[in-house]
Image (cartoon, rainbow, N blue to C red; front, side, top):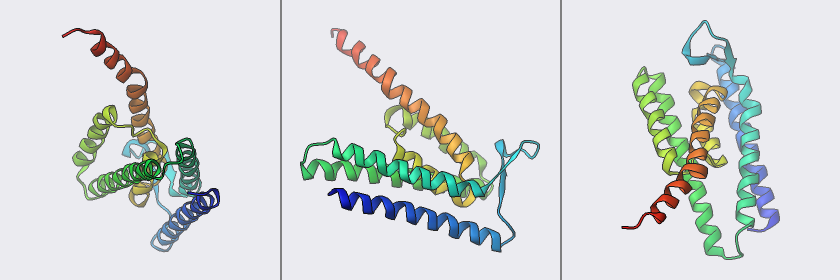
Amino acid sequence: MTKSNSKKLKYYVIAATILFVAAHLLWEHLNGGILSHHLLHRSDYPSISNWWGLLILPFLAWLSTVRIEKRVTLQPDDALVRAKILRVLLIGFFCMLVLSFVQSLSFSAGYENVAIYLSLGLVVVGLFLPIYRTECIFGYVFGSIVSTGAIIPLIGILVIAGISWFSHVYIKPLVFRVIRAKPL
C-alpha cells in the first residue's frame, strides 16, 4: 500500500463515518428529535445527546486509520505480511461491529440480559484477544451508534479495552514467564 493510497483510504473512511453519523442524526431529527441516553439507563442521571457522535466517531476513524497505517508501515515490505495484518484488522473491526450491533439490538428489544452477557463475554474474550486495539474500539462504537449513541458504548469499551490491555501487557507475560520457569 503506497503512501497516497493509505492517505486516500484514511479520508474515505473518515468521510464515510461522517456521512453515516450525519445521516443517522438527520433521520433521528426528522423522526422525533435527536435522542439522548441516560448513564446506566437511569433517568435521574444526566443524559448524553447523540450529537456527540459527530465528534467521537470521526475522531475514532482518524485514530484507527493512523494507528493501522503505522502498524502496517512498521512491517517489512512483504506483501503477504501486510495482507495478513490487514485481514486481522478487518476481522477485529467487523467482529466488534457485529457484536455491538447485536448487543444494541438485544438491549433495544428488551433483552437486557443478553446485552449484559455479551458484555461479560467480551471481558473474558478481551483477556485472550487484543480488543484494546483502535480498530476494535472503533468497530464497537460504530456498531452501537444506531441505538445507544456514541458516548456510553465508548465508555464501556474503554473499560473493557483497559482490562484487555492490562491482561496482554502485564498478566500474559507473567504467565508465560512462570510456565517457562517451571520444569515438568
